[in-house]
Each structure stands twice: as C-alpha cells, then as structure tokens.
Amino acid sequence: MSFYIGLDGGGTKTEAVVFDETGHIFLRDVTRGCVALDVGLEHTVAHLTDVLRRTSESIPGGIPRSVYVAQSSMRYYGALMLPELNRVFAGWNIRWEDGGLAIITSMIGRKDGCCAVAGTGSCLFARAGGKIHHIGGYGYLVDTVGSGYILGQDALRAAFGALDGRG
Image (tube, rainbow, N blue to C red; front, side, top):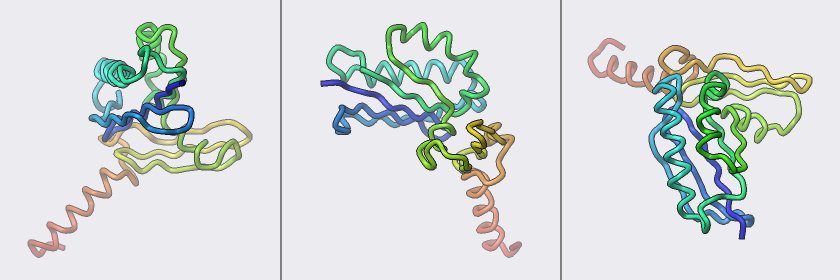
C-alpha cells in the first residue's frame, strides 16, 4: 500500500494529513502557523521539518510515496528554504509550492481566472495565458486588506465601540 502526505502551511495553522491511494486518511496533524514572513525563515524550516518527520512516523517504512506541500510565503522564501528542506528530505518525492498555487488550481483547474485568499493574511492569485500573477500576500502584519485577521479586528472594534457608546 502506498502512503502520501499533504501539508498546508499557513499563517494560523499548519495542517498535514497522511492518506493512502484510496484517499483514506490515517493521520491528521494540526499545529501552529509557520509563514516565514511572520515567524522567520529558521522557524518555518524547523516547523516544516518537524511536521513532516512526525507525520511520516505513521507510515510503514517511514517514507511516503509522494508529498505535496502548499506553503504560504514559499514564493518569497523558497530559494532560501528549499536547499535545507531538500537536504533533510533527500530521496523523498516532494513538490513544494506556494499555497496560493494550490488554491487557484483546485478552484479553476488550469484555466485562466483568479482567486482571493482571505486567511490570516490576504492576496490574489490570477492566471492569464497560463502565467501566474500574485498580488499582495506580504503577511497579516503589513498587508491585511480583506484578510481574516483584519476582518476580525474590525468586528471587535465595532463591537466594543457599540458596547461603550462610541459606535
């Protein structure tokens, strides 16, 4: 039986699943976020390494047939993260991509179009003529327009303003 790992590294959480060729999930691992723009390059690499090692322990033989990692900030830090990650996981079949590429492809396939990410941070991914364009996505502390973080902050501000008569 072949086993696979899918990992989504975002700002709020990192989620990994181990599953077989039928899609049956054997393990789900949810931990803190690990976006290099927010927590730093070294922490992101260490956290991804830890999650992949830990989840692979549930696989007979310890090495999955294939791994897909959708990691926010890979677009900006991939060239710095991948040498160490590829060294640690030498011999593994791993595809590393920015999380937005996984989102746009899962939503519209290979067609032209766009999708907005409104998670901890926000950004827009668009495909035109087969070329990917990325707008925003510089982390929730800097680039918050439309993010879950800023929408939640705005809701709290409005609620407390109403509570004490300012809103």
